[in-house]
Image (cartoon, rainbow, N blue to C red; front, top):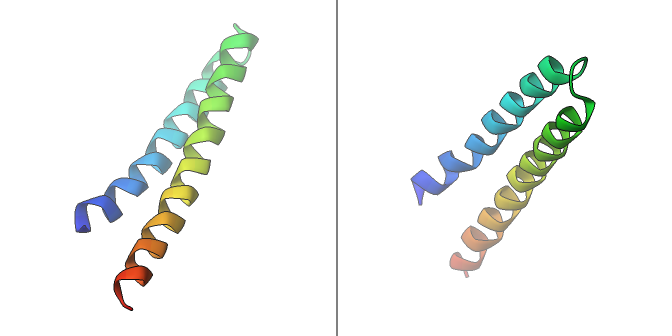
Length: 63
C-alpha cells in the first residue's frame, strides 16, 4: 500500500511536465498547447481523486 501512496504524487510530476510542454508550445502550436493543458488538468484531477479514494479505502479498513 505504501507504493500506491507514493505513486499518486507521480500525477503531480506529470502535470508539471505537461505545463512545461504547454508553455513551450504556446507560441508555435496553440492546439497542441491546449491539449497539454487538458492533460495537466486531468493529471491534477487524478491526483486528488486517487488521494481521496486511498483515504476512503484506509478508513474502511479501520472499522
